[in-house]
Image (cartoon, rainbow, N blue to C red; front, side, top):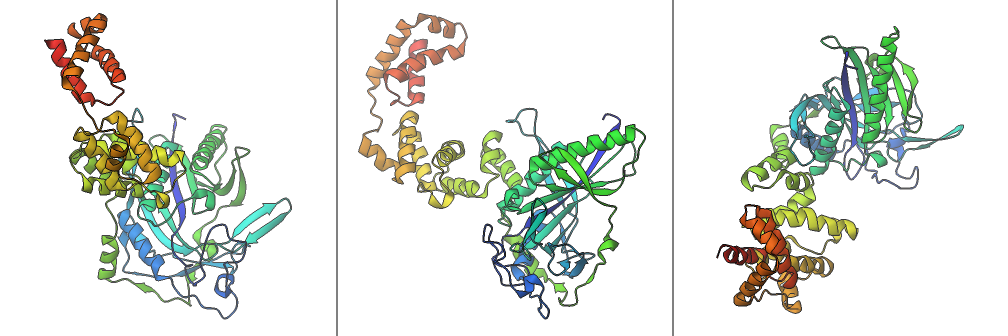
Length: 483
């Protein structure tokens, strides 16, 4: 392995979130009865003509903007001709020599030495992003194959990278970054189990130091991100074994079988001319105005990595929290709404959102649409803690009630009598009693072992049942220790 460099390029197909299909008003929804979301255009019946879905064009422009592509002011449609049961017209409407988006890059983060440490970022170069119609789905049962045309005609973008990745670590980071950004802007749900994101990989090897690309092999049937990585790892080992034994790698398309952990030849060398591309005679070229492109670019929100950098720099949020909050659009919007309601303690708000809120949502299987606790309520909870009206320990109970009932935290505090009522003299006396009762940690603290104070603090918190703010205990305990 040390003798060879691996070169990987990916072709990722992503279904766009549009109400209707690319060239007809037929809708698309996953899980419908087979062959019910079809019409004459989808089935390619004689005399039918395609009518373009403008929303698919606009979404593709937004995607191109996210990934720094050059958006074409003019592009056209081509017919990709092939005979296969999943293509009812015996051709697929796609874009060949004039794609909608050219160039660009996908920023990826390679995991740091520990999961809680920010990793290295780099940009993987893109070749193009073009728009096309999806094909039907074949399901194989023994000697029979069944076809479902429900997804045929669905808007599909193909994101083609340059051969610019050199490990499955980079492949994994690339696919996760694609998924994150496309979901963040609402372009696609990217659910690989539902076929909303599919990936083909082009893999080759070459001697370390060589500049010419080796013979590539295309891998298909990669149905999950882990499946993509496993298939590529297997192909790397296969190609190295061939070269080491004196054989040559043959350009071909291979099918990955995840259950067997093996790949099998599907077809030999295949080039663009095999598809006999030509301009679709039924569709006019597309012209995009500057104002139309600018309008779509403005709709793109602040992107996850930029947002993360800003949160870490301006709000002083730790990487562990930003890598949760920033990568999910719903979570990010929720946090920012809470921050607008109370901006004095962003770290506390972020921790409640990233930890407690997500934990409760997972435990109760609650989606965003069914969420009863509002961002402003979390902000109010943090404010009550900061103003020493509520202890952090009691706040945990309040939050659980808030999540279940949707009540405001102040109302719950009043109903349950959780307001902090501290007798400072009694608390000081308790601190002195604990100091006398636990001489060992007291001696360790006074000898310079600062963490020893936690033993004393824990005793006081236990005896006050967590109703006294920790910072108040800290202050009085230190005063008594230094007296």
